[in-house]
Length: 319
Ligand code: AMP
Ligand code: MG
Image (cartoon, rainbow, N blue to C red; front, top):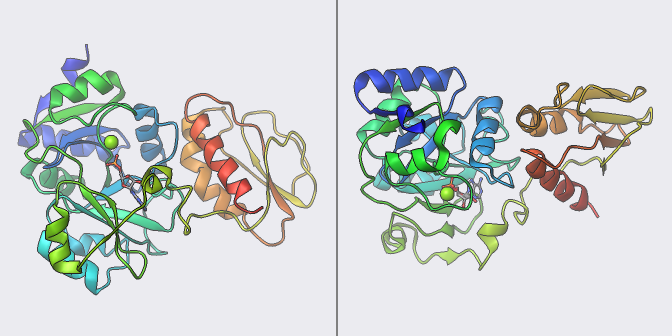
């Protein structure tokens, strides 16, 4: 029964939840906005488990939760605007999309291959205690299955995710009750990607009048985002054989021989493991000495749907 996973958010259970996160598990926890489905943001496998648990058909980028601006600065480039906004509104319901630092330890899957990261410092004792005890950045989308409304109580989380989550910390109802406001600061002009728990008017007192992302622009991201990572080498999908001048991105146990170089997304044919490896392996194989990257067929189940969606976009982006 999924209810057994719900635990009071006292010190002992926060400490246990932190151990679960550090070991690559999933923890649902309250923030001031909604309950988040958290994983160690620096662990590819743990992040892939988030997408699997939510049954997300696509790799939407996830928001990374940290304690404060200094912790954020290890992963993203903070300019003056970001510094001003963070000192004014953090901790609080404002996520900032900022350029990812090359030396960041964050999983590439967290930002779905984008070279930006959405990051925020949540308010609320439980969230802060959990981040501090874990001592890692925590990736956390809303703790519900894809297509359902965001949960604002531990009971909602248990009803929606049940056994897909290792532990649910019950910190009572979320005071804000809607997701964070998402502001894109990766370009010259700040763009409001999602209205949320911090009023736009409050933001505008600091950054001036805001451009709203066009209708559907956010829903269609990351595919629509200009800065989305696409390999510079052509992608050849559904490859069942490989040429000597190609790199091979393999899947499963039966791998064609003869590639210049090969990496296997999941020798055991596990789509969650493949998702964890996808962006890092694509980057590793994206080298000028290869004529193309041949990608073996990925099954259309589990995270295979999201992987194939991403691969088709990356293949199409070049033409
Ligand atoms: P959720 O984690 O479910 O609250 O949703 C995260 C929201 O932030 C989605 O609307 C994403 O599209 C958006 N988001 C997260 N990371 C990025 C990013 N790097 N660039 C643009 N939007 C982002
Ligand atoms: Mg959501």
